[in-house]
Length: 530
Image (cartoon, rainbow, N blue to C red):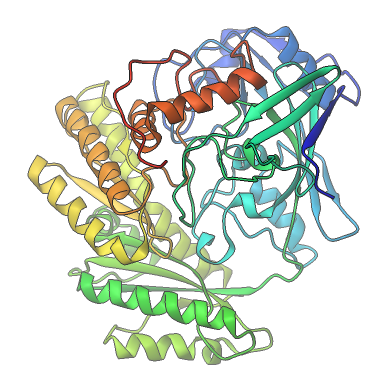
């Protein structure tokens, strides 16, 4: 039953007196995240084993940064002098009677997937890298390839346990508390009543958006914390909805030599998939994800010899590679289930796809390795440039989503912007959502800086097209992403987020500088989404 009130409580569980680690050698491996932004430093590291441990650590520290696997691509898990609270030891996994799963924040998505696989179930919104923790996934509203069919993390989270900056604990259950008609969420902490104004900006209506605090009229209280990147509270436990049956999924890889044809094919596949969802049991093409690699991405695979090593042939004239995930009907032969896809490829005069059947684990791993070879190859090139050319060179990339019908226009803009600046770049991502990741391959600091300007141009174009410059990676401490967030919601929108944080975290203790700065800067940006 829904109400307008969330009640806080005191922390429960044992206090295990976790060590506060300050030894520089032991801290060294925690000083950056997957964005590899230099200059990380930490006051201490604490690894709590219980909810009470987390509460005590938060109350004792001046500034705190919660970390999981530190797989952030935005610098959001790179410390800047805080006490690090690692969720690594919050490891509970409990199967609930209703089929849901309750997990500690430090459990990885790979562990969740393996646990559910044993009972034939599935947690669908897995991002590409399964080493991330569920706490981190909730903090960024993580998404991935299969968002097209299954949605983001938000759609699958039913309950959260949150430790606030005060040390108080919230138990949030979806449907129990919503914003009132005045747009206020009310939290009761003992005798203190906190009235939290829901920001008034309008979030774009897209399959995935990870752009600051969630805001909707009448929103559920739990959604404020999903995607807040640990700035409003620390997730210690989550209860997840799951699919009770696990589909058999085949992969198919095709290379196309005409981008217009490739986009038409993706459009047809998307439409066929949505039709199959509307008519369950019909013989159709049930696509859960389509990922794409542009011409430069395919060239990186060939340059690094990955195609030869994996035995996957890539047309030298290929301008786009597509990796299609196909959920197959139960008790259906692979050839029969894939026949509609084969017929559609034939229509488009596409050479035979390389197909990995659900039970051919080696073939599936080869195609997944082909996909992962692109970001790996890009990161290696950036690492070599940093080592051989200038240590100031950093990864420069975007996380863009546009409505699919504008995707071709966005791709053309990528080409024009990179060409006009003389930049090398590769674009890949989740084309079934219209979400891609243009990455710059800088050969100098000047090119890196020009690449950052290109990322701003990409983000602004996405907003003009009804999309978002911040799709699934969050904002973190990345200056370019924070600038795009300001342009997306305006300075008034950022101030509305600050107002939320000041109520729940008045001392700015949790993740200070993540998503936005503490100081209100001079107004420069009108609010776009009002």
